[in-house]
Length: 348
Image (cartoon, rainbow, N blue to C red; front, side, top):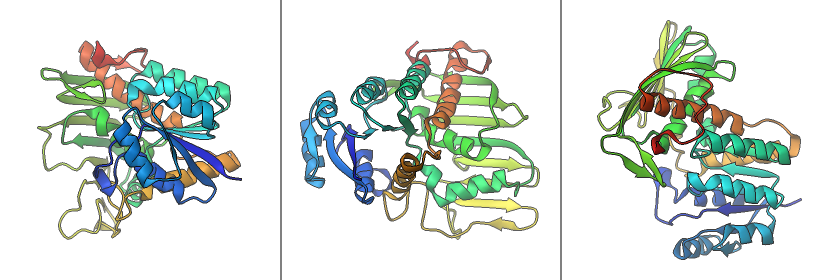
């Protein structure tokens, strides 16, 4: 049976990171590679973006009003690629029109309050909810997880995130999610201490952004997650590094000279290794590779009821850590988890 899919938010057709256009194009290409799925419609508030999208995907009906699209098309799966502040209303509209599954781009919402309401509404409607942390399907990220979870670097002591540009909400959700992918669901954060520089705030998809962020998150088993983002982050650092008692595992944006991939590890028994792959931090020569794997997992989950790597509960954990860092920095004091703040801290 063919499953009807729709996309909200087309974005521009100009090339983007990882060799793909706006993320909506990657979703549409991925859907087209799965015989059981059909992209029936897409919505964008910008006519030029919608025209370009339909030119790339001519079998797709275009709408300038996403509510009209959902009412007329009644898609079974809805991918939401619009700005974070709009996603709660879009989820509500998709649920009201019978969506069986919803895939939300990261970050899943603009606040913890909105994220909690989205998850509760989907659960009440019996709708599967996923968040597009597609890097969990990349080989370097699997190697990173396995090196940590498998004890290859000895007992884990800490994980460091160093994002060499500002705006942790833009790319940081992927980095925090990669850390949680390796840490596993049994570990949970206890408290956070953070500092926040809002002297020259920027803007990202309608959200205010920080100039620099530094946060230390303490987990229940003694592990520390350090998060730093800003244009003055030390340039020699990998974006992700796990420090163990007898080695390390790390992910870099680009491979070091002479190494096989963006992943490398040092173990007491095997020395320094960087296995070869054409998969990198974004995708591979195929700009939709990780996105396609995510959609395959979603299709399998809908057919079998199985969990996926990108179930919304995992994404919420990462969003809570980022919001906790913002709130602790805003208040200039340590905070304990769970975080009660319903609003986006940088709005305050």
